Amino acid sequence: MSTSTSYVPGIYVSPTSAPVTTTTTVFDPAGYVVSAAERRVIRWTIYVGFIALAAGISHGLAQALSYAHINILPYFPFLRSYYQGLTAHGVANAIIFTFAFSNGFLPLMLSRGLSRPLHKSLLWTSFALLVGGNVLIVFAITTNRASVLYTSYAPLQAHWTYYVGLVLVVLSTWAAALNMFLVLRSWRRDNAGARIPLLAYISFLSYVMWFLASLPIATEFLGFLIPWTVGLEPLTDPLLDRTLFWFTGHAIVYAWLLPAYVSWYALIPRQAGGKLISDSLTRMVFILFLLLSIPTGMHHQYTDPGIPEKMKMLQGVLTFGIFFPSLATAFSIMAALEIGGRARGGRGLLGWIRALPWGDPSFTAQVLAMLTFVLGGITGLINASYVMNELIHNTTWVPGHFHMTVGSAVALTIVGVSYWLVPYLTGRALWSRGLALASSWIYAVGIFVFARGMISNGLQGMPRRTFIAQAAYSRPEWHLGGIITGIGGTLMFIGLVLFLLVIVMTIVAGKRGEEPTDVPISETLTAPALTGWEPNLDRIGLWVLAAVVLILIAYGPFFATYLPPHFTSPGFRIF
Ligand code: HAS
Ligand code: CU
Image 1 (cartoon, rainbow, N blue to C red):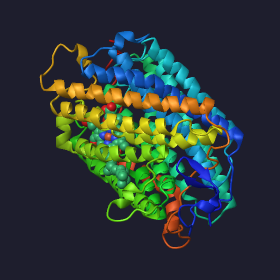
Image 2 (cartoon, rainbow, N blue to C red):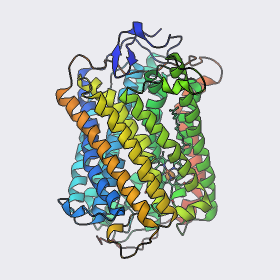
Image 3 (cartoon, rainbow, N blue to C red):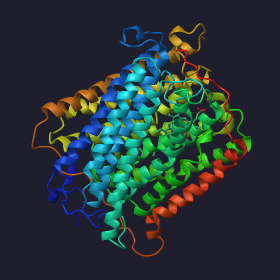
Image 4 (tube, protein in one colour):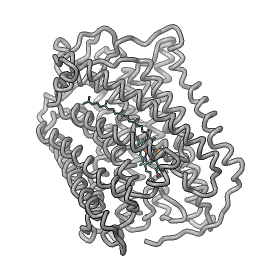
């Protein structure tokens, strides 16, 4: 039986008023309290992400407006080119905001899932690396030494501080992963034969996948880009660099997504008053991400010369494989929500939807995130289709797709999680539930409008990564989509400004004593099995081995036939 505090919209109350009766638990609920010292460093880690978000969205607004032929770039201090702003936007929002959140959130979830403290020294190490990396990156970008966009494509060349800064950020994620590994290992020693609590399991697997996935980009930066930019090696191999980038770069999108999935699977059912339907299915979903996230990067390179078509086709097929765990997630979460809606008195085919806790900003933001992800996922499938990709590659369709994935499924989930997490970490209640709700709705409407503009213009051939406001060419059919994009982007900007306002006010002026005192951990309908095949799901080492084998099959032939590197290109700094 659960003895932990239970979740009701926006606030935690005593266990007696739990919205569902408990049959089994997926965690050791012994009322474990995460120490104040750990909460402090986790809080600061996540704040780094919020600062990055604030910096990035102002550039986001500028880009969205540029599609509507409104140029506000001259009003930005430090800004010398569109590409400088686009780099700042991508790095701050897609890389720093997301990983700062994960570096705090995932270890916290593992610690709470296992009821065990984290290593504080590693938490601080991770924080220091994140901050140090950011200082270097901010220096490089604000001084216009790194207008290479967040994909760091060679032969565009950045100052060494940019690459080293990103390396430090990756190291900060490794420190977080190591922390989780050590805590889990000691837990397993003390609990031989026990199943890993689900929340800890999925949190850990998220960063195991990311650790494996980050090795190619580490190779690219340390082995090629940094020696090249400091002059140790005058030339570089752009195709090899791109391939190493996408080797990591597709999996990185799941490193952003999986922390959101951790919340959708392990927390949202409880926030909705429901239960998770299957422990084993959840574990299998995360294993599939571990297996298939990485050997799929070439779907970003369908149009690149120099990669055999057979390799692209193989990775294209695997990309369709990585679609399935998300489909399973859609059905699984929908079922958990339905259980919650019915437990709250919802009746009929769809009446349970109305009964969900829509007044809770944390819940609402995340369900809106899920809804945008339906379209994000469908557009992903179109991207992955070898022939259809020809039509949309390098058009604004692609940012249309990824703002419905990382820009909403992930970002809006972080918003929703923050609405209980920041109160939990700071000991201050959420400042304004009304504004928090408004922020999520405005952002969600904004993303649908924005994506409609980007997607339709992409189909009309509008190029991505182009300063349309000053382009010497245009097409009449781009005008309407451009205006829609500008309106949507403005709404998104307003939504996130409201979010940041609510968070800042919560930190400085939230009421003490009314904050949540525990993580809203869900229960599953059935307990994890101790016999049969299911315990094999916890043999993480074995699954890592299987992932490595798949990666070797998907990437081995390319490297075997391509290497040694073809050093051909000097660096260019053209913006
Ligand atoms: Fe992607 C390009 C394929 C998912 C991010 N993607 C990008 C880029 C980014 C990105 C940033 O195959 C651009 C990179 C660049 O700068 O060039 N993507 C996919 C596929 C998926 C996918 C097949 N992408 C993501 C996610 C991202 C992300 C997730 C970030 C977090 N993507 C591609 C391809 C390209 C690409 C090509 C290259 C395009 C090109 O040519 O350049 C799949 O993983 C998607 C699976 C998703 C689903 C949706 C499941 C829905 C769920 C919600 C359920 C809703 C509920 C609500 C329960 C199957 C789980 C119920 C509510 C009630 C009220 C009841
Ligand atoms: Cu991808």
